[in-house]
Image (cartoon, rainbow, N blue to C red; front, side, top):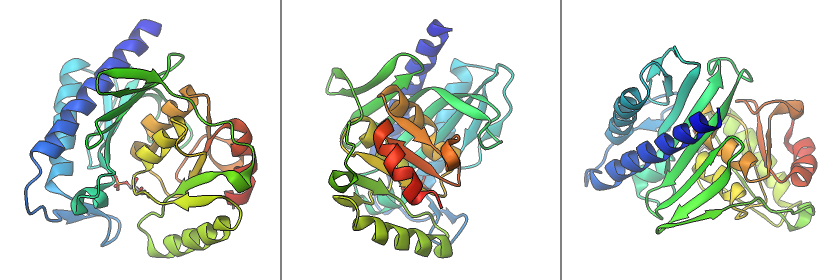
Length: 270
Ligand code: IPD
C-alpha cells in the first residue's frame, strides 16, 4: 500500500544515514583491506562489514520478518514479501583511498531477489555521507534529494542528442571483462560529449536521476549496486533497463531519460 511504501522509504533513509555516519566517523586512520572477493582488486574493508552489520540489526528491529540480501554476505529469506537489498559501502575502492565518491545504498524490494529479472525495488535511499546528499524514492512517490535540511524533487535530463550527452560507466573487477568494457568506453567517447568513471554505481544512477549526467551504462553490477538507484531514476522520470529492454541485471544496466536510453541502449547492448 501507499502508506507501507512511505514507511519503507523512511526506514531506508534512516538506516542509510546511520550507516553513513558510522563509515565516516569510525573509519580507522590506517584502513586496510580485510579480504578480497571475486578478484584481488575486489576488496572488503572492516567498515563494509560493520556497516552491513549495522544495517542488518536496524532493519531486523524495524521490520522483523523481512528478508535481507547484502553485499558482504548477509542473506535471509523474507516472510513478508519484502527483501532489503543493501550495499554497506558502494564504491569501496574510493572509500579505501578516501576519494569522496562512495555511498550507502538501501532498497526495499519485492519478488525473488536471487533470480535476475524477478524482483524490483519499491523504496530506496542512497546516501553520499561526504557531500551529505541523501537521494530517495518510493514507488509512485517521486524522487528527492535531501541536502542541508532541504528536500528537492529531482528529474532526469531530456537530452536526446547523444553527441551532447555526458555519460558515466564503470568497469567491474574481472580483468577480461574490464578490458572489453574499457574498449567499448573508448569507442563511446567518440560519440558523446564525454564519459565519467566515478567508482560508485549507486551514485552514478543518482546523478542520472538528478540530471547531473544524461546517461549511464554498465555490465557486471550486482543487485545491491543498483536496487535503490534503479527506483530513484525511474521515480525521477527516467528509464532503467537491461538487455533487450528487459529488467536491469548483471548482463547490462542502461539508465537515463527515455529518449536517451533509446539511443544509448543499441550501442552498448552487445
Ligand atoms: C562497485 C562500484 C563500481 C562498479 C562496480 C561495483 P562496490 O561496487 O559500484 O562503480 O563499477 O561494478 O562492484 O564493490 O564498491 O560495492
